[in-house]
Image 1 (cartoon, helix red, strand yellow):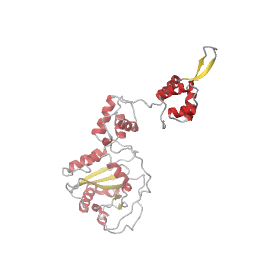
Image 2 (cartoon, one colour):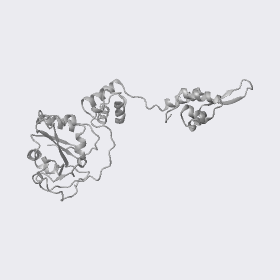
Image 3 (cartoon, helix red, strand yellow):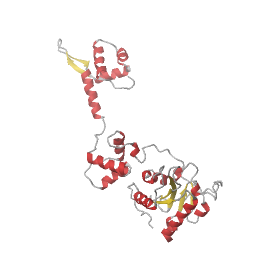
Image 4 (cartoon, one colour):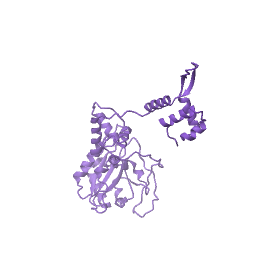
Length: 327
């Protein structure tokens, strides 16, 4: 039977073969299971029966008793009941399907509203989605559940001027966990057939505070323009709030010497986007708003401002105690 459970027909066959004085080995061959399975089944289905001639009790295998016991065990181990009412399902479908929240963020928002609804965990929401209990699918999730492989120590090294220069001036970033001002930066581009306009996203590691700005082209000149605008907006507090900036090795971040006038710049190793893990993870649940892989032709400064507000108000599990920077 290859690991399958015995059926009612199998138990009827075992009972008939035992009455015919067939050995356990032969019964196992007929039923299609191991001899050990037959022995265990006989022991579980034993019952006392009265001999009508001698009026003595004797032990016999009962297929009915064995089946009743199997049904009872299935009921005990069939899993937790589904705690899903129409109102809770509507809220989950709205937050996840329409507002692009993650299951954890959706559960948190429903809890904060104080509604008289069953309390479930984020893992339960994932299970309900994959089992088809909600009008959602894996495409509605910001990211599916996956096993995160252990990465090597998160470090980045500073890059000399020029994209072709060797990465020789290596030194670790200083990022105290209790301090703020350590930013990660990346660009979000549209389709290759669309315009060269893209979005520049900066993420503060401690507070997860986001800044999104429009780049008219994916060039170092445009990145410098945005950094100059940010320095003007924050004024004297800019140096306090922007202690380091970590980015990848894209051509738009090639002006290392010019960018150093704003903050110490660090570059990730090639093909090591996890060295900007905060920025990468922040962009995943917000990819529908960031329009990654779509045309950026209609993206404006107002759209970038809306994305910034949406990101910074997105519910997430984060230790309190540090307020996000404000201009």
